[in-house]
Image 1 (cartoon, helix red, strand yellow):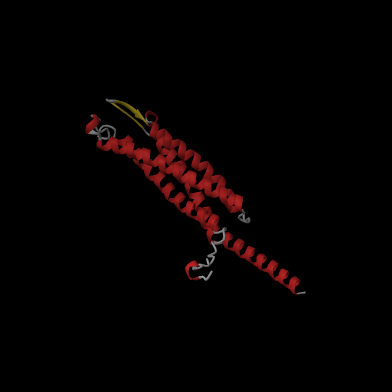
Image 2: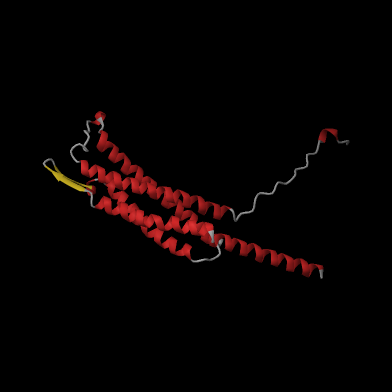
Length: 201
């Protein structure tokens, strides 16, 4: 009887814990995560469109985003993240228990996405900085005095991209918390120290 009561109590405890986890994930954290995945969809599309339409022609020639590998990288990165954000938001909107494989999948994909969009934003920022300031050591003159509209539009796309970076940093923290909170805390085991010097032989 005692064993049956203990097993019943254990099962009830597990069910209660599972319900609490599902209620918690379906409320504040799940809603926040879903919003953080939906917002980058619009931001990525906006940054992509602004950059794709970035071109300028004048008496000195024409300039387009496609002339720069860094800007093309920014466009591709925003396109990839727009698709991933939409798909992951759809999965997050459906209440379901966060299993270990699912937690690992979101964790890894969020980490990769964060570093991808951060790298794209950093590369594009360096290009715009050189366009504004130039580099005297390699005799590169600044170009934004001649192509001001091009530089302003590229800067706008980069700013929007870094808003996506902020969203994905927060998402990485959430997915990290959800993954590593599933692991039990390490148990401190007491180590018995034997003083061999005081033992009698």
